[in-house]
Image (cartoon, rainbow, N blue to C red):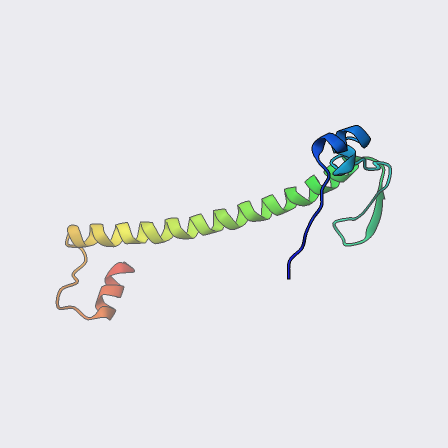
Amino acid sequence: MHFVLQVPTLREIEKTEGIVKFFRLQNSLSTSNYVLFNSKGQIHKYKSEEDIVKEWFILREKLYETRKAHQLAKLKKEQETLQNKVRFVQGVINESIQIKKVKKSTIVAQLLK
């Protein structure tokens, strides 16, 4: 199965209606009807583009704050882990923590001092 397309030449198109109109390359949109779902999932009619952007920004700002709090908590946890690792390595270097031929419970007790 195959298709055969017959398209007039560019000269014929330009003579009759023009390329833009023939290929529908230009379109106009109405900017008077701003009915959208708001952040609560309800249908809301907005007066202008600015109202839409303002509501969107309020929603995004809350999400940015939540994301920032999550990232800070994650970084604090990572910092605590790294500080404990440094403390352990320094203890081994300073020989304040003995790890050779010692039970695990004894090492943990040394770390908690």
